[in-house]
Structures are given as structure tokens and as C-alpha cells.
Image (cartoon, rainbow, N blue to C red):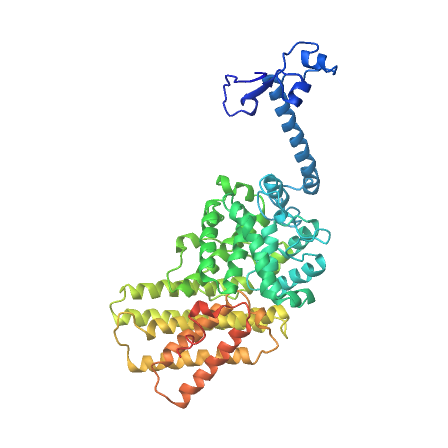
Length: 547
């Protein structure tokens, strides 16, 4: 035979340089003609008879194979370095752990891994266009992402969604957007939310839902891998993804995203930001008031979402009260101006707060109500006197909140700006849903015991009044697009109609009965205008309102 198989005795059997090697001894012409070669050098007999030039190829050795393998690795490494050079140049000298001082807000605010370093880390793992930040020069094949469309969509996000839950610093986000340094899933989820209020012709032509779903999928494709390496920006992207699912009425997926968000935020010790800021995970935020405020707001948003999900599922909140022992966010105006103050959580809502902080006091009341409802279901209030005492306590607390909220509204500039008007409507609807939840606890006793006829009549009248007021609020503000009441509002509205419909089941037919259902129909029609809202989540439109 002119060829034989020889095996080295490798120390590492799977090493590329130690794999079995085929060594060839025949000359080139004999191998090409597939005849036996006598291997006579410099000319074999076959080549001599044919008067052909005979030559032998050099026999590869294991050492030469290893050198070739190393050289190929070096070539690949050089190519990767060339790809990473633009990313490193874009990152420049900015600090990787976020801004170093509050006033300048100079560095990326997403945490200890910046957007560009995140892209660089995953470049070898995902050699796909998923990591490309949309820009005017890099349109994607599946989603139109030129700045001509995206910049108005981003401004729609900050006009219509940001006032509800302001946890992204607007000026820094816009700056990083133009630099191409925004973490891609954060950018995609912002687009998925903002596109629902966009009037851009391209959005109208393709369709709001279709384009939003594409952005959501692109964000999920990246987050499916990044959630194993949580950072501040990954938590931010998951929060936005959860809010997007809540807007779409996808309660199951929102709950799953919410649980992942809580787990990641806990692993980063967000809930300890004001208790133990010197622990290793939070040590990088000790000297940065801006980053500390960002983490604090992210955790408060987790608390808000936890309350929304618990209310829609009729369960206790997932987060225990012991993990909400952190300072309130600074005033919204200071947050936007990058001037930060810290203040402990109040015991009650008897102090005037602005914007997001005022809303959080209402969220805390809602959490108390959900826990109280669970206590009632578990039979922890055996005495009617204790139940009525708790009811009056909640009533006083909510009345105090409404008084202070109205005072804050009266002190705000009039007439409302678009942002102020959206915020006011959202808070009013959320307040009314809290009242509905409170009356439901006391009106429908889980233990089957009866309340006094006077209390039953009073609770029934209040539920009817809440539905009427909510319908009027929507009916008298037709200039406000349904898409501008984003976030939790569809859930709250559906909850109001569902509860009020249940209450009217106990009413005899009467003009009042017909009137309340007319108002419930107004709310249902309003929900149907929200094209992104999936009413099937609540059993279909026929089930809402008790019909």
C-alpha cells in the first residue's frame, strides 16, 4: 500500500493537533492516476517510463499541524480585534460603572456593563444583526429603524408613557441614542411601547400591532440569553418588556417576565440600595447619586408592576413588605435635571408629593388592600367590628390621598400639558380601581357572613358611582387617545367594569340598573378602541360587566 494511517499518542485526545493523521508516501502523479508507486526517489519507475516529472509532496507532521492550527487561531483573533476596535473607540474613556457625579451625569446610566461592552461581550456568541443598534445607516431587514421614524417614536414614549413611570433619564437616553450606545433590548422595548401612539405614515401603513410585535421579538431574542448575566440595563429591559406585555393584555407572559425581573433585581441587591450600599454588588453605586437613584426607581417600578399583577390575579403581592424599605424617588423635576435628594417612605399619604412619588403612595395603599383582602379570605377577621374598623381606616387613607392629590393638581400649571393631563387621568382611574377593590372586599364577604343592609346599600351605591365617574372621565376626554392611557390603565378599566358588573347582579331591574350598564358599556367600548388590548384575557367582552 502506498498510504497508511498512523496515530499519535496524544495527551489530549480531542486536541486538533492530535487527531489521526493520514500520511502519503506516493508521488503526485501516481496518486493522481491511482496506481501503485514504488516510491523511488528522485524519480519513481512509473514516472521514468512515462518520461514525466516526478515529485513528492512533503509529509505533514503532528508538529506542523499544531503550528497550522495555532496560526488559524491567531488569524481569527486578529479579525475579532478588528471588529472590536470601533466598539472600543465608541466607548472611549467613559467610566464603565455609570456616572461619577450627579450634576454632570457624564457616564452611561445603565450600570456596571455599558451597552457597547455588552455588545462586544456577545459578539462572538451572536454573529447576527440582532445586536445592531438601529440607526439611519443600518436599517434592518425585518423592522424599519431609520432615525426618521425612531426619533418621533422615542419622543412619543417620553410624552405619553414616561410620565406614568419615569425610570429612564430622558436627556441621557437621547444622548446615548445618537451615540449608538443604548442597550438594544432597552431600545427595542421603548419602540414597542412608543409605536402604539405613533402617527408616522410608515407605522400606519404596516400596522401598529405588527411592528410592535417585531420589536418585542427582537428584544426577547437577546434577553433570552442575557438574563443569565443580569446587569442594570438587563433589568431595565425586562421591566420595559413586562410593561409591554401588560399593555398587550398578555397576563401570563407579563407574570413570567415579572418573576424573572424580581429574581435578577434581588440578585443585584436592588432592594438593599438604601440599607447596605457597601455590599459588593452595590459598591460601585456608592459614589454615584445618579446611579443610586436609577436603581431605586427601577426597584420601585418592580413594586408597581408587582401590585398590578397581584391585582389582576387577585392574589397577594409577590414582594414582601420587608423588601420595600427603601427611600422614595426624588421629585420628578430633580430627576430630569439630574439633581437628587433622598427621603424615607412615609407612613401615610398625608403629605403632598409630586408625580411618581404621589403615585407610589397610592400603590402602597393598594398593596395593603390586597394583603388585607387575602387576610379576610383566610378568616383572620372573625369579628365584624375588626373588619369595619379596617374598612374605615382604608377609607380615611384613600380620602387623604385624594385630598392631597387634588391639592397637588391645583398647584400644577393650568391648563394641563399633555404630560400632566395623561398623568391626571391615569391617577384618577387607578384611584377609582382602588376604591372598587376596597368596596368589593367589604361588599362580598368571602366567609359568607352578612353585613348590615345599610352597609350593603352604601357599598353598592359607591361601586355604581365609581363606574359612572370613570365612564364620564373617559367620555368627556375624547381628545385623549386611548393609546395615551398606557401601562396599567386597561387592566384597571377592565377590573372596574368586572367588579361593578358583579355588584349589579344583586340589583333588581330598575332605571338605575340600566343606567349603570350603559356606563359600563362606555368603558367596554373604550377598551375595544385600544387595539393592543386583548379582552379575551378577561374571558371575552361578554363577561366583563356581568352580562
